[in-house]
Length: 197
Length: 197
DNA sequence: GCTTGTTTAAAACAACTGTTTAAATTATGC
DNA sequence: GCATAATTTAAACAGTTGTTTTAAACAAGC
Image 1: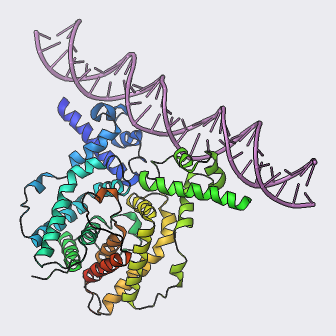
Image 2 (image 1 turned 90 degrees about the horizontal axis):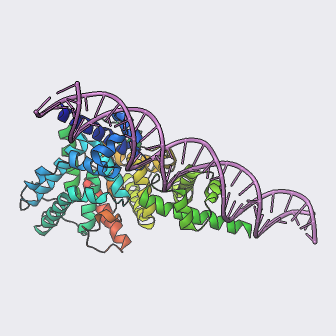
Image 3 (image 1 turned 90 degrees about the vertical axis):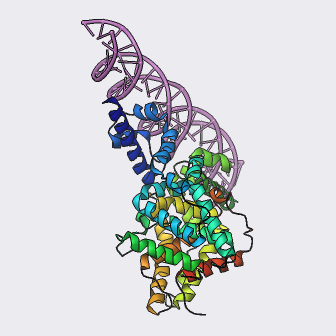
């Protein structure tokens, strides 16, 4: 059918764009490369997405899970909240390292496309910061600077070993997802000097 | 004199390139932009550096302090070593956030230019990893996965609040460098479950 | 079978890319 | 002071960029 063909082409373009943007960056990737990778004609990007910038934006509509966050209770216990964010971010990081790579690049350079990212993921960071702050107020966490603590946690979460750059240094197996989540949680909670459990 | 004039132009180009690469990325920055920012002719980049790629490489020759690392003793106590790396990286991160931004971008995408970065900073990461591993062997640190621990520390160190992206979330003053180093050290050592002192 | 609107393809578009050239300017050695 | 070298300039180079155009192929309704 026409509809499914169209969706198929759009999906093929999105997947190719994600793959190439992750490795070469937005500016380093050409529409022709994306279309060759996807096996479609060059004009398809402009026709289906209305240009390279809109294609980039469409990546975040397609591959960022933002529905689940609106369902969580902002007033849940801080430690539970922090643990939830650690789990969700780590799961997402492991399931779609390409999107993480793209997000990291766009954050590093202050790109005009950053707004699209903000819309989708900033609510989660706000929640995380709120929970960390509340945890300190409740005497569960101990640290001097909230900003430094928050940025340390965010850095721990977003940085990842999937990058080729670190491959020469790392040795261990990473297939056990639950173990990784547990390790990350332990490191972060100890870093925040969590007293409990 | 000739020497100073030449150095002056080369320096102006290097500073402009660093500034623009940090914000727009390597591919997003054109030689014409760099030269306009530096107030020099377009041909100067090819003449003095031999091309855009070599200009990028020259950034790391010019702005990465690699001499001081070779003077440290690899066999020093692990905790002292980790603390040293935290201090040096944090000081450098605060003194030249543009270079950190560039490094982060190049690590995120697996760029062919990554080799230049590796040469200059990988020895330090090797040392850090060695000290973290030794600290665990000596019973000073406690964690399950060395790789996860190392990546967490690296993430904590490299991620930084200077990025425009986080500005909307952060509130505190960051002028006290020593306090920041202390906060980072505390977070990381607690994250590694350091028992001592 | 013809017309309609939609989707694809190849070619072309102007603008921009990194780099080089050839001439002009400046500095250097003696 | 002059010949030589080094530096700077403006113009041009061939190749690539994102996007658009024109025409062909397609499916659906009647």
